[in-house]
Image (tube, rainbow, N blue to C red; front, side, top):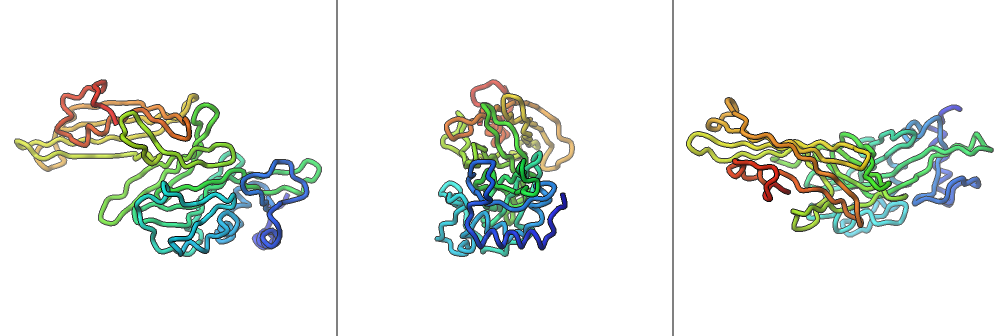
Amino acid sequence: MKTPTFASAITALTLLLSGPLSGCAHRPHRPTACSFRAPAGADALTTASLIPPPVWADLLAPDHRDRQDPLAELHSCSGSALITPSLQGHAQRLPSREIDERSMTMTAVGDDVLLWLRLLDFDDGDSLGVLALLSRHSIDDDPTGAHLEVRAVGTLRAPAIPLDLRVEPLGDGHRVILARGRRCREETPCVVEVQLLPWIGDRFVDATLTSSSATEPMPARIRLREASAGAVVDGWRREAEVRRTIRAEASGLVVLETLHVRRCPGALPEGCEEEAKVHRERPLRYRDAELEIAPSIWPIAGSPEALVPLDPDAPDARG
């Protein structure tokens, strides 16, 4: 089968947008959150790449042109609100920019495609937009009727400079989207974070992150590195650094933490001696629309002077 040309893809999409969104006469799958379809070529990624970002915006967020209005209620093609109080947070929206190739990230997931179309930017270094899973399907009795279909959709707010998207098991038959990216703010160093978005049925669900040591739910985001340094006392100071990785296991996800505590002479980075190194595994579970994670080591590291002696099993070694 030939991959459709750019012109043929646009022509087909123009016809699609001018008519009802009910799709083709042959429907081998039940209607999904967004039931429109587009002609598909050899694979989903190739076809999705032929469709320009502004057309994807029309398909996935029909009222996206209202995003200039801070009071506008934007929706995905499923009818769900794109912006909720938890997704808005306390950050301020930046002026909207033109939707182009820089607004879109696509990643192959097996035979499917994850597409993140960024529509809004915030002053805290985040972007928000529609996340969609695209699948290529063919009809047994009509080999020419292959089509591209949106199988799951939701809202993703994540660091504005995307690095990668991937799907991992979350346990109990659930899956989760991991959106790793770089978040940059003025006058502060950039940080690399991973946003977690559970995939439940045909929806990507905005969930909070809870821990036994947290006083209130937090955004479902993991920062991969944090560091702290104490004041110089008697010519010495302590530094603490925690690094995190996320590992997929048969039972679900585990956040691996490694904490380093160093004793350094004066304010110079040279000549530091490692005082402690601690590892911790933090299982992550999805339960009752929340992501639950085991406590972290890091709050100790926020006060390096309190790190020695360091007992990883002590009650205060949590986060």
